[in-house]
Length: 444
Image (cartoon, rainbow, N blue to C red; front, side, top):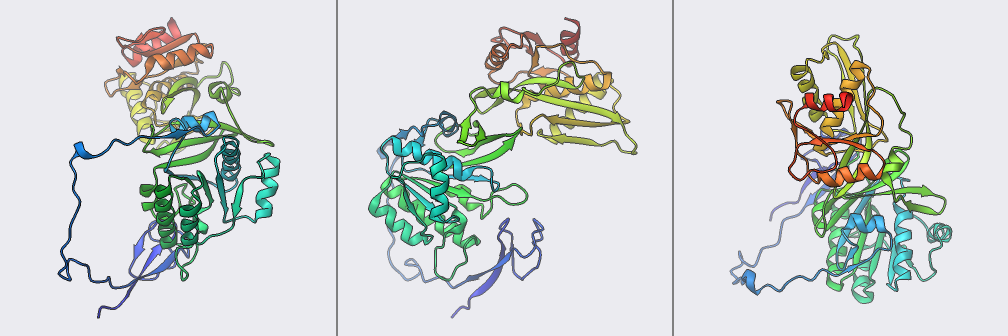
């Protein structure tokens, strides 16, 4: 008979090791290697000689999936979800402690109750008295069902019998899937998620799981959880605001974001994020450029800042925050090679004001103009916004939804919009190269 084997798995990043280690070799966390016992698997029906049958259908025979959506009651959340809750879907919301996950979900629970939907809140981390105290501040209805049950098997059976329309679990790290497990361990988080996911999909409940994040900012627990759920949302901070971002969404576009402000009355949606993010932008300062970025399907006006200073080191530093370091390095190389901008002896700092993270390639032109402005000490004219991707030859390449970006700039009273040449681009200054963009900005 085969013996059970023991391996050790990091509770922070999921790294597996055959021996006990005090520190994880991958993420560097101390005391995170937990034992996992692998017992011999039972003999399968195939190996025992039983005949196996599999149901196979053609694509034509598969019935169409009708996606039923229910509005969450908060427009910014509906934007991120792609239109509202999807019946029978499972969502994971992750964020740092104290960022407002529980507050936002209690508000969503209230909206669900007002819409006549049965709602269950599983308080795994707080007492019911603490939940009631926060709920009173947020004016949540007394009809909200509460439980402190953390046994995933018991919760799964309760879902099958009562079938609440919305279930909120705060948090998934507090659940237990077997009596011998430890809450928060890799196996308990994975198995607990699997049990609740199966039950929610059977009865058509919308299941929302709150998750923790590691010191590196990634979602804690095994990566398989992100594959099991239908949508993964991240709640972050930026310029004093809270940003809810869709990392993964099977029923809508990924990358969508909603902006909130934390107040004494809870998380309030910010209806005009462009104005909010540019509220503290200084005027007439070299190195400051307004970019019309696109996050998901939403155009936003944000400030890209650059600073150049003489380096005391043999190798000048390149410090980047909020943007892809490699893309910024490419833009700096193009400036130095194509425009002969002297950067060899300068430390260059590039930042998206407010702490927002951008992955949009359309920010390249803003980075180039900000660095050029900082080095030459020439501020951009007021009411100027830009967007465009910079190629290695110094050309300005087209970006998606250029007219929507230009429209957002016009709506925010940025009358001069500089972007790439495009057949369907209207309402701005079209440029083909980085040199032409510099001329259009300062000499027009």
